[in-house]
Length: 267
Image 1: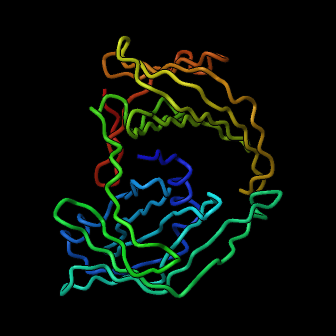
Image 2: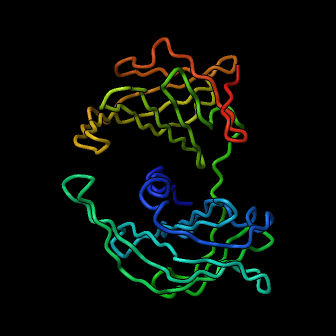
């Protein structure tokens, strides 16, 4: 199966999540059936993310064009049809990002609009997508399994610095964000693998510094793209061993558990 990187999830969370809404019956079994990140195992790069917000289902998806460029698709309205067991979506829009010189100058261009879709989930928990024509071809999706044995995957905090670790197949994607009260933010993005002999995560990553003025990104500098890293867990504590500049020295990260909007640190 093709690996789907963090860029898709970041786009879902930040670029488009507030732009479109979908409604559906607030039946918990319907919500549980549809609310996943779904990926297509045909090499197309197509993926769909469906989540619940106050009893309504929100949907956004990703597919590639003939040249491999990412296109995003969304719908103005989705309603659940109990008689057919389908999530029926109307007012579809297929969008392409056109980058500018700065993030603020990036524009969204509509490639296609007005199409529909019907989504059903079968007993094997496959999502069947039909009815969007050339905008989003008919496909079958499966749930993106980002679970492992629970050892590394999750969110970890040390003071105001946090680490987010996700897993897909044999790859781990790791984001480290260094806490800062000033206008500059520093973060590292790693792709890692599990070393079965040592039990640690090892990988290579990129360090980036971003400067904000009045909450607007004004400067982004990539300092390096070949930084080695090791993450280890001992007695439930995660350590970040940065081989390039030892940025994680003396930090001890604890896993967080989210429950009813509260965050608990596990000792």
